[in-house]
Structures are given as C-alpha cells and as structure tokens.
Figure 1: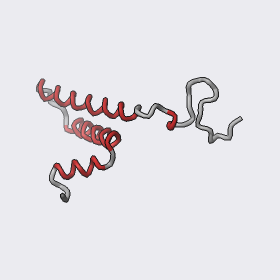
Figure 2: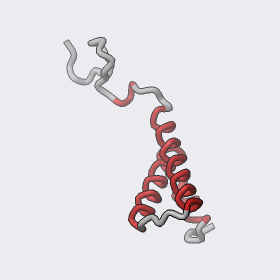
Figure 3: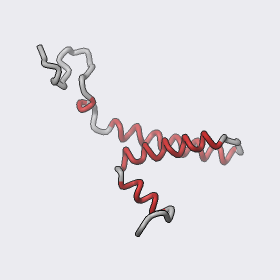
Length: 89
C-alpha cells in the first residue's frame, strides 16, 4: 500500500503518478517538433501564397514562443527582446 506520495509505477500498467518519471527529453523534443512544424507551416503559406488570417499568425507566434521558452529557457524572451530592439544591451 502506498501513501499517495509514491511516484513510481508499482502496478505494472505503464502508468505513473508523476511527470517526473517521464523520459527527460520528451518535452524538449515535443517543443522542437512544434517549433519546426510552425516554421514549416509559415514558410509553406508564404511560398504558396495562402492568405492566413491574422489570428492564426498570432497563435503560431505564441505557440512557437512558448515551445522555444520551454526548450531553451526563460532567457529566450530576453534574447528575442534584445534582437527586436526592445531591450537594454
């Protein structure tokens, strides 16, 4: 019997009680896939001349930003701000 704080899989059903037991690179790989997929979608839309609504571009931008921050850390926001000229050097 466990006390509810056990984070291992003792039942043998391949389910866990915590995200801490996942493979350490799972979220980084998923974030990378999201970033690459959105870049490919944006590039494909530009090349093919598809008119994409502004709200969709906003969703792409936010999703890519969140995935990039997850993969590379909070410093990413500061770096992007400096590159765009909105921050102090």
